[in-house]
Length: 90
Image (tube, rainbow, N blue to C red; front, side, top):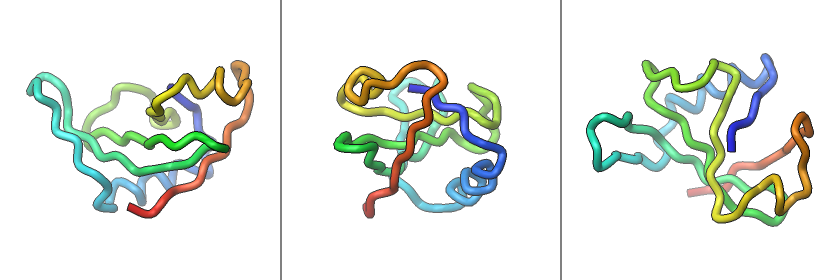
C-alpha cells in the first residue's frame, strides 16, 4: 500500500534512511535494494519499505507499506483517510 506523507514527515523519512533497518536484497538485480522497518497499524503488523536513497519509484512524499492483509480493507479505510502507525523494535 502506498501512502502520501506530510511535508513535516519527510525529514523523518530522511533520518530513517540512515538507520540500519532490515536489509532487503532482491533476487533479481533489476530491482533495487531496500530497508524494512517493522510497524504496527492498529492491530495489523507490517513493514515500512524504504528503497535505496538514489531510487525514486514514487514521489518523495510517498512511502510504501507491506502487510499480510489488505490494510485498507482490514481497517476500513477509504482513499484520502489518515493512517497512523508506530514503529516496533527489531
